[in-house]
Image 1: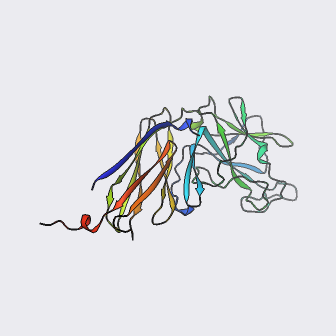
Image 2: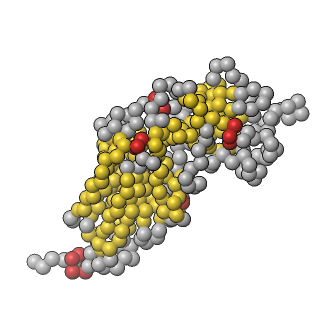
Image 3: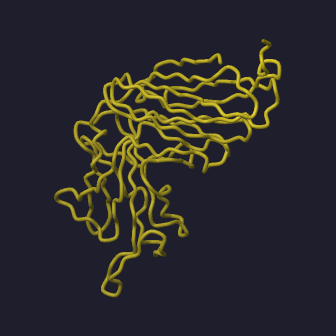
Length: 296
C-alpha cells in the first residue's frame, strides 16, 4: 500500500508561543517528587504543595471536539496546591480535597509567586481555560469559587533555562512561606523538535490504520513532544500523543483511525497539532475496483 509522509519544519520548543475523554496520554516532561519547605520559612498548616512539573507545551480544548497546543516562550512550571481549613484548638482535623472549607481560608492566586534566579513570577492565565492531560493532578486553582475543590494547579511562565531550582512562595499573614520544587528540567537546556507524520495514501473500507507521528529531539535538553491528532470522521474528536525524548533521540507514536462505514472514494482529513507547528494529512477510501481481487 502506498504511503504518504508529510515533513514539517524544525522549531525550538522554547521559542513558540470529540470528546474530551478520548484524549489519552499522561506523559510528563518532569517527574514531581514531594516538595520541601525552603530553609528559613515555615509551611502554613493548611497548605500542601502536592506536585510540581515542568512542561514545554500543553494540550487544551480549543473547540468542543478539537485540541490545540500551547508552547511556552520558555518553559511552564505547573504546581498543584491543596488547601484545607486551618487547624485550630476546636478543629484538629483540617479538611482536604473535595471537602467544604470557609471561603476566606484559601489564599488568593495572587498570593503565590514563583521565585527563580532572584526574579519573581506571578501565575499566568492560560490562553484557553480547559487544559487536558497535564503532568500534575487537579483542575485550575480557583479560590474565588466557593464550590470549587480546595485543590488545583497554578502555572507560571519562566525562562527556558534557570541557574538554580525554583521555589514557590506564598505571601500570607502571619509570615510568608516557600517550598523548594524538585523539577530538574527547570535547570536543563530546552529541547527542539523535528517531526513528520506518515499515513497510507489509500485505505480499504471498514478497516483500521495508523497515523504515525515521528519526532526527533534536536535540542540540548530532554523534553516531551506533546501533540494531538484531530479527527473529522467518523466523529469530531481529538486523540493526544506524548513522546518523551532525550537529546538526539527520536521516537514514533501511532494513533489509530478507522474507515468504518466510510464511502468508497471518500477522502478523510486529519489535523495534526504539535509544539513545533501544525499540519494535516488525508487518506482516500479505496473503491471496489482498487480493492477487489486482481485477475489471474
